[in-house]
Amino acid sequence: MRDIVDARAACVRLCTDDQEMRLIASIGLSKDVAAREQVLALDRCVCGQAIKQGDIRFQPDIRRCSEVLRSLFDNDKVQMVAVPLLYRDRTVGVYNLFVEDVERVASNDMTELFTTIGRHLGTAIEKARLDEEANRLSIMEERTRLAYELHDSLAQTLASVRFQVRVLDQALHQGKESMLWQELERVENTLDAAHTELRQLIAHFRAPTGGRGLLPSIGDLVSRFRKENSINIFLQNEWKNARFPDECGLQVLRIIQESLNNICKHSKAQNARILLRDDGAGNYLVLIEDDGIGVQEPVMEGSAGEHIGLSIMQDRARQLGGELRMESEAGEGTRIMLSFPDPKHRDGLGKATA
Image (cartoon, rainbow, N blue to C red; front, side, top):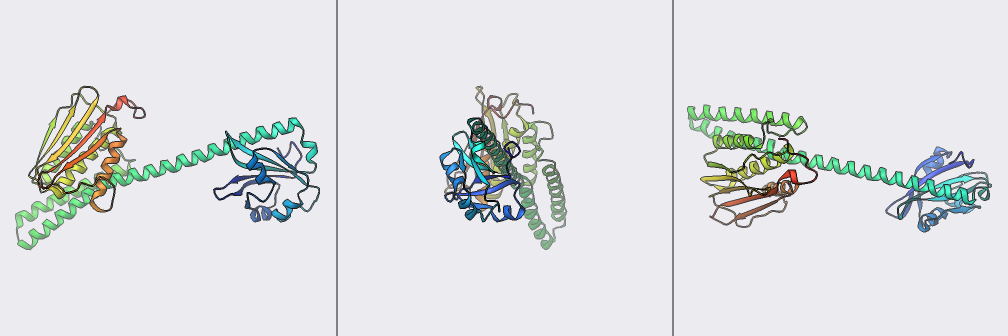
């Protein structure tokens, strides 16, 4: 555009949230001028009028602009065109052309060209902003997912190691050699599991199903908890030929894992049951219950301490398009109920492949 109208210079300014215009690009302006004039008040010049009214403004006399812009040019003959950057029904900024004769470029054809370029620039700038916002949200989602995976896998495994080390310390002080070797073996096995989980996290959060599907992974999880705890854990599988995408299977597996962790750490239960059931109409149910001491007031909102696990479980249920409910009374045990639709019937999850 600078070349078409033989302009001395051109620049682009975007509106900010605090009623200012920020210089984001320029051509023909010195670095000193561009550095000094990074921000202008929206209500102080013709550029602000173009933004507020959404139409082109011609400024034959830029002496007032020179006061605001601290003398952009030494040549008093330089005049200015201010063209709003339009995106749909919004004005996102303005671009300026500094010319020697605004009347020569104020024809209907040139005005239409200015407006068209303003719309193209506005659309491109808004698209760039939306892409940047989408990228920022994607990074936040990845960080959240990493935090969830650390909590539900490596953090839980390391917590188990900490408990086992306490038992090992007791065995050492009591001089129980057979118990000592048994606990040492448990610590070694748990550290091996932590190492495996860490490698999985590094490998782009690979789903811990080993490529064998969700049901075998649930079976492995239950077997590990049976070995590491004295609680009787019963698995009742009524799912028939259930097959899920890796991402869906990961969410279900982590909810079951967190529920078992809570049972082993807090419930003082003797028995626990996992029930997998479907209604034949594309809806799935996961029930995890125990006969422990229960809790007085189940807290399902995120907060510090132990309740963060419940908040993560709810977030995982929402990602499945489902619902997570918790029922508990003091002395009556605790029940976690996850219900979710068949992922093949939901947009965005794709075909079930795992």
